[in-house]
Length: 322
Image (cartoon, rainbow, N blue to C red; front, top):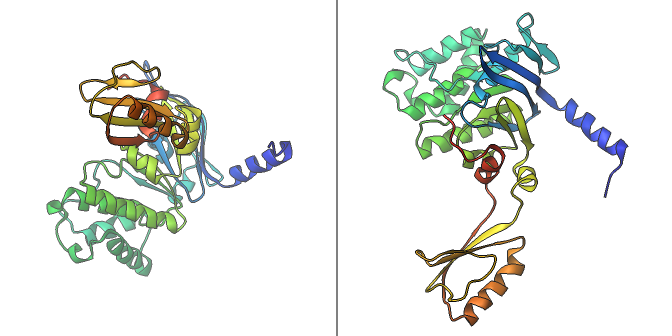
């Protein structure tokens, strides 16, 4: 039921009030390459937003523009109701930036790294000591606080790298591939850290190639391609707009039915048939009965829900772009 123009307008106003970071019609060209061609991104208060896109889609340029490392040719970036520009960068002290590259002093300890980055962020005295103590506990590096970072594992360096970028308690945090190159245990620890950071009120925007993480961990997803925003929303919303919420059912049989059945995908080599149902509870029993009547025995059944990978490929195409 339509709530009416007044209700829709109120919802839009509320969403705008809750916006902490907004990029509008971002354009950036490098010579003959149009890196950004009108990208729009909005990060809301207290949410974790994932920025996805194929290689060369413009994600890195957009993140660098928000961080102040790239000047847009056209467009506007607003952080906490303040327009960001090369002349007005004061609001960026409320922004935390965690680069994909490990940006640490390898011959210093975690304690020394945190103290150095804290001072770069303007911290000193008791405030600096409190934040360093918090960061060591948050990263699980208390017992390694006086060891040289050079000998740390990739996961430990990654956790410390994140801590150095948020030591000044930023309201908005940019994270570029925060879990790249780490093992599953370290990846889980990093996500626990990010969940805790979000619970303190920080709003997070990150890039990742781990689609399963984006699907399960993030509040909303923005997909960029060819420098433009082509879709944004929750996972459920993106599924509904693209591949649909139906389920793919795979059945492994003792043999393939002799007669061809319309609407089924058949793999004779693996003795597997596949069917799509909007409602598995309605469609599957009838298929099982047909197989039984045909003298086929079902050895295994798998039900696959829609995935972010399917949505991503639907929107960007299946061609691999390097």
